[in-house]
Image 1 (tube, rainbow over the protein chains, first blue to last red):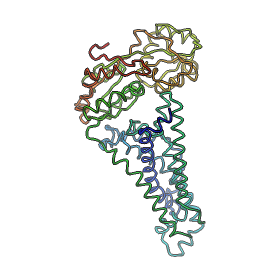
Image 2 (cartoon, chains in turn orange, brown; image 1 turned 90 degrees about the horizontal axis):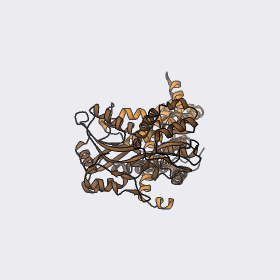
Image 3 (tube, chains in turn green, orange; image 1 turned 90 degrees about the vertical axis):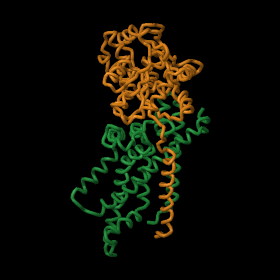
Image 4 (cartoon, each protein chain N blue to C red; image 1 turned 120 degrees about the horizontal axis):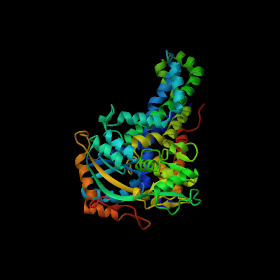
Length: 220
Length: 282
């Protein structure tokens, strides 16, 4: 039974979409989250603590709430309905980016906070402005940044509550690994649902291993 | 430090992320002739739509994206303008949808029936009966566990009507024997199999469900257990953005001799799940 499914093109399209949506969302969260997390560590401004506390609280942002909020925004009768994004992969990318962003920000902030304490004075003595210190610090803390990105990626790959609502679990269009697992469970095909779960865990493991291999050994 | 050595690997990682991420969306672009059908889990999870819609798409080139929801949620999705056509099974909810002038035509495409399923142990001694209301009364009296969908689906709506007919307020059993799980048919069947408990199911989902455990049909054949599926076309005055032309073609096809034959020929394990009834509505 499971072997027939593994050989089916539908499974590969589901895996492809899962990876595409999650990688897009993770990329967006990383491009925004790493600079924001770093900036929060090196600039002091009114309200900074509040933002940091909020980001840490949002580590546990409930996907169902994000899904519902986005649904109401993107619905044809909602303020962004004209974009026609509801029940598309793009809506799923937005939902997952929102979920992954606080994770990347909070972990990047934590990593850079320590680096800034240790090397901030030295960097400033060398004549770097705080603006130029941002990319330098992200680079110095790259292994922690990688962890931050992978934590965000893990969130996007495992999440189901938000994408089920804004994607609609439409066959061959917005059906991902996690929504397919929910569907097969509801069909009572528990072995198939479990098999899909193992494929999902295996994929996440592979990508994590590949990212570590690419990033190389620690240099500090 | 080996900055220069490492820089290309980061570049490669970034390229990989954006490249792998971006490619599949090119293919996922909105096709010109694609409609969204808000439907119910009972017609989608049972495999019916997956079996008949490719025939329609092959003939017309119109692709159909199916949202499998409960009837209440499917109608709400259409109310908000997020669907182009509706295929559901709750006469009362459909009537209010029509009364609000959300729909213009409502046509029956097929019917089957609901069944009461329960565990082998049969605490309420209802096995083999043909009176759904009496069966529910016996279940309540025995305080035998009963799983309710509780999700405003067509099945949930019928269940509540049956309790009313039995003059029982099932909420009085909340927290003990009456278990409102707020989920789909499959979830309810999974829960009922595990507890074990009685529950009301449509026959299509039941026949294609694979985790029955000790559950079996205990009551069937009551005239009140009929399950009608209607296709509803939306009102262009209220839903100007919906793709009504394409939706109309699908609605017409579902009631056409060809669509009706496709519905009637769909079987699971040799059993017919839906009886086409466009020409002779039940």
